[in-house]
Length: 123
Image (cartoon, rainbow, N blue to C red; front, side, top):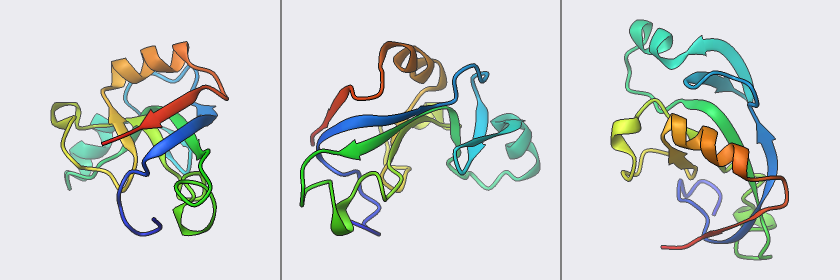
């Protein structure tokens, strides 16, 4: 649900693949590479912020009322699968709804999936 900060459950598809060719650790703002590696940003601004890094797989919900439409719409909430500057904290809730992956693992996944591929998110 909008503003829940939780990851929407249910069946999704990959709506967009963003970041091809960018080096691991590249930081994205508004889905655009900034030209900076997360280590550069954290050296200047060590606020422990969770950054969007390396690759983005933007999800679209496929279940009306569950993850598509209204206040539950995954795509309109900008829910992604993406790399993070906190590889060591994978498995902990750090994101406002996104699914975080280690940078090298998101590169591998990105190469394996295509727009339209389905993703099931469960508890």
